Image (cartoon, rainbow, N blue to C red; front, top):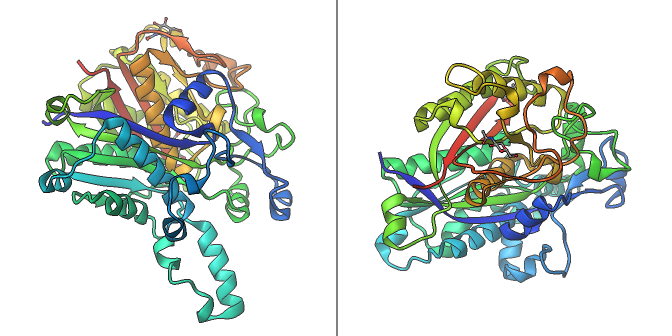
Length: 429
Ligand SMILES: *[C@@H]1O[C@H](CO)[C@@H](O)[C@H](O)[C@H]1NC(C)=O
Ligand SMILES: *[C@@H]1O[C@H](CO)[C@@H](O)[C@H](O)[C@H]1NC(C)=O
């Protein structure tokens, strides 16, 4: 089997533009969740008025599309695709992969998904069409709308002629993109894949929809930075976020032959389904249990060897509890650890909220950096693990990062529809 390593990272997140900026602010305990109630009267009328927004502005590390995109590209690309483009550029520069030869371009592909795509465009054009008819429909409507156009734009900018694909599996999108892209390399369809997820749907209609599904935190509108509190006993819903995470995946010999820096190896990828409910998890956490188990089986790694898990934990009462149960069932089972306090697990959603289709790829980047720098990123806002407290006995890396040798790590992602995935990374040796 061909081995696949990670050689480049790129991100746009509520903690800022760029992986290094995001990572250092994450470790320093910053939170990217802000109030959005003054952004439009519509937001102020909704039960949840907070979001993990990519910071905009002229300052260093803030989002200003003019810094990256021509006016034409800005018009052609919806915001989620713009984030994907900027994160891809960072990842490619980080990997120093700038192919020019035909065979190299043909061996490089793009796998970039989104959960929702451009709700703004659907909404605005629907209203324009209703009021003004055919002539009000922009010729760019369809290309801005289609989710696979993020991958399309990246391939067009760089001339990558390998596989071009997009997953859309709700909040598992980013993890599926990376896992599927790695398999394309393993199978020989490509030597290099630019893979990840992007999301930008902080629109009143999206928030209204998630609030109606009773998924969002609604009690923290005046204290946005405390709202996303994975594993905490007072957690009560997720905080919607936006951004993009992109990795450069590369076949091992290909990376070695060009002297590329190797962050980590992708050792395993597990997929499963709850087969249970549209939005609610099974209480016993069977879905995530199977996803993690398959990822470790594929990697050939025992549960006892897992040093860190970046949990999906979105700060919902049921979801965090089910995932916590799944982690305990797997890691304390046969070939597992002796007690729960030896399980190191955190959810970085405390700091950035839930980036939906981008969550899995941004969190995969955090997991890779945990391996690369032997640093466990913290779970922000975790005061008291629960409930009940006796079920929450792991080391959740509350509030501040912890240092330890990290050789093997998992990154979990679960989505509406009951789809569960887990990625297993290891230090490259
Ligand atoms: C968990 O993290 C702590 C550092 O906080 C470390 O001492 C311990 O070895 C880690 N456990 C595992 C299994 O890696
Ligand atoms: C598996 O994915 C489903 C999809 O919504 C999600 O609801 C569930 O949380 C995941 N399973 C668990 C128990 O976390």
